Image 1 (cartoon, rainbow, N blue to C red):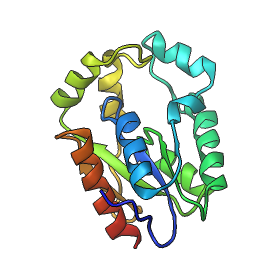
Image 2: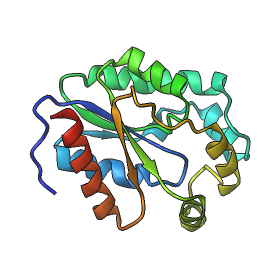
Image 3: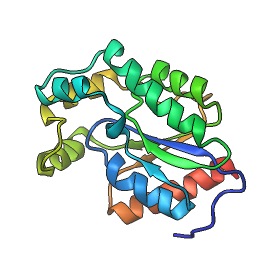
Image 4: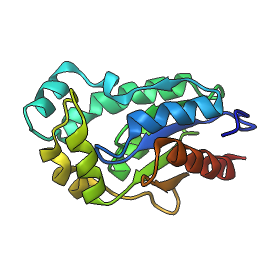
Length: 174
């Protein structure tokens, strides 16, 4: 992967259901673009983490403060660039992030339920149980044609996925 950043640094929101590799791919994409990475899970209030750890899906009210915190980070990185992970499963969530940071672009990591469930089963120490995967897929609204973003399949190695993502992002923003 090249380390040349885009002409105008953008904030990239790495989105998708749990287990798609946002935490793995996000830092690789950020490194390739020469911008900082922020882990979206770190923006969750403790109550959200406790709820998910107990196997209870978050509702829109739970996600509001989390999305606002991510939006503030993205706003602070406008013109500088950055990569942040956020499931951003619904259009309304992405609209909320765009309202805070109008120049964000989305990198939607996609894959089959079987592949993602298998990867989740291998994770150790993550608060999101595989049991919540159904609720994630039920909530997911794919990027609309009018939304700035790209979808990248998560089959292959992290390096292959990140390389495809960087190529697609560069075509989108350059």
